[in-house]
Length: 301
Ligand SMILES: [Zn+2]
Image (cartoon, rainbow, N blue to C red; front, side, top):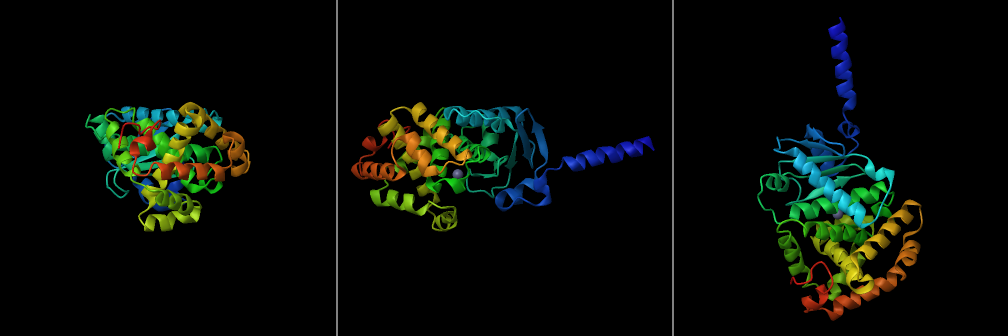
């Protein structure tokens, strides 16, 4: 009887432990993938799930935590909500785009497992997996700070995630290759391309057509270059720029209007800044050396 009660008790515990997403609320890639991923490891911050065994899961969770804390500290953000544990799902079947990842809400990041296996096995993946991880975790951070994509021009929501992703990846062994291959493409964009990215990835409803047109890569990396432009040409310091953006995130969390906060924290209206950015793209057409001067891409073309 006691054993029977114990079994019931344990099964109730196990059952009630199942997170909410298992019941359905998640949609898209996360909803398709996460319910199939058993928990394989947990530390004080990362609840790690995967459909296959991972050697040295603690190495992976430590590095994921590094990426998260990198984003947080670059923006000088301190909030209790940022200390809540996150769920990371690593999936062996390549249903996300090559090397891709995806987030949901405030807690969940899912990604293809291969770059993480490469990492623990000492196989060089050239930094792309870590670019994606720092990128996606920035989305979680903004969601946790009550500064979700709906409050921000979308190319900036993606752009800040790209800029932090570049700066995390470049510190990885051979992360150089990730940055270099992105630079090769960013060096080629024209004034018209940049103008199209600022105009066509602005509102949440722009995501679907941008994906359909195959332009997401361009739009979000033009957004990344926008932040690199602010660092190189306006602030002349990564710390000052990222801290200013951190203040914008805090303002959004306090329900300050985005354009008001941007003007307060950056000293120019968004419109003035966009004009200056587009002018910078125009005068550096066909001159990647000049375009990348002072950015994370300096020396790459
Ligand atoms: Zn993103």
